[in-house]
Image 1 (cartoon, rainbow, N blue to C red):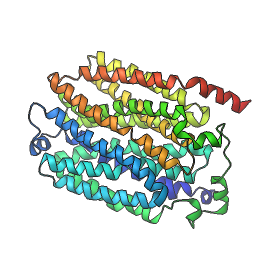
Image 2 (cartoon, rainbow, N blue to C red; image 1 turned 90 degrees about the vertical axis):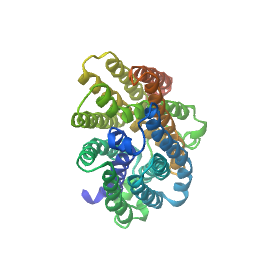
Image 3 (tube, rainbow, N blue to C red; image 1 turned 180 degrees about the horizontal axis):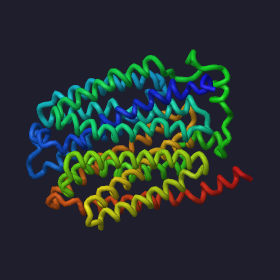
Image 4 (cartoon, one colour; image 1 turned 180 degrees about the vertical axis):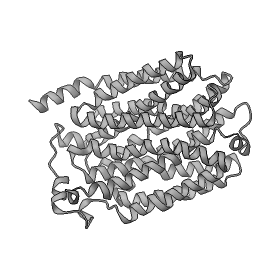
Length: 420
């Protein structure tokens, strides 16, 4: 039986660590920006320091989002494996450069290049999943690597807090670079191949399973024309809202816990880690329900409703622990959204267009960077108060729910047609 499941080892494992360490690299700034020494070393001590901190994420996500588009084209030409190796090499170097930065400008440059390098993560993953798994197991395959997306920061928050308090913020960057260099990169070099047909370790029986004919209700014409499919663009808008919420909370939650709720650094790391565990739970639950019920649009609507409820709970909560955990769960719902969006990308594209579809969808990351900057600017304008930013996130979540609610009728009709 194990000899027929090698795709989970050859592809799912490298992609898991790809996201496990990549997300720590990407979101390490949320923990590092709570370090007074980091703020002092980069000159982030003035009245506009929160906006400048938010600008670091904004500039990263602009580079990340723009590069998603050209990486999507490159992947369809070079293949996912070579593209992953190139991107991993780039961000290993830039993490070292970030640790060596002695000014705000130098550090910002390292984040821009890191964004350009990491921009291939979504298209690469979508391409591998599209090539290596049949339509019946897409949900589980997606969940296997998206688990790394959230388990990485959950463990990374604890690792980074330890490295910063025991050594320095510089050391934390060097350690993260070594993880990529000695774990992620070799996995793609020695294990992965672009397609199962190219891999000598894949049996003909497993290959036949991978290439099972699709049994979903969509037509090949619908899949090929994802750019003209209005539901693809509804997902695009919903993902804009989701990234605004997700980045806004994930980047500012540690600062919120330390400065607004006066948690210790250790307690902050614990709650931040827990918020990523919440996201992981929504990913696992979403992967199971998406494969079982075939209603990703309905699940997306429910996740946004829950997000509104927990953000509202954080807004009114007087107990610091309840407020912090509520924000963590709200962030978790959007972790589940990220998984569903990748299911939509595969649903509306073919193996030939999966890279482009994922690359265009990945451009929505850009609004996450704006949320980080806008929230920082709003904090500066309100004397450090987080209340206006939470109100903004509630409105954003409501817009996301409205967008996905418009897809429910069509989705329901497809399910009934499939079972007719």
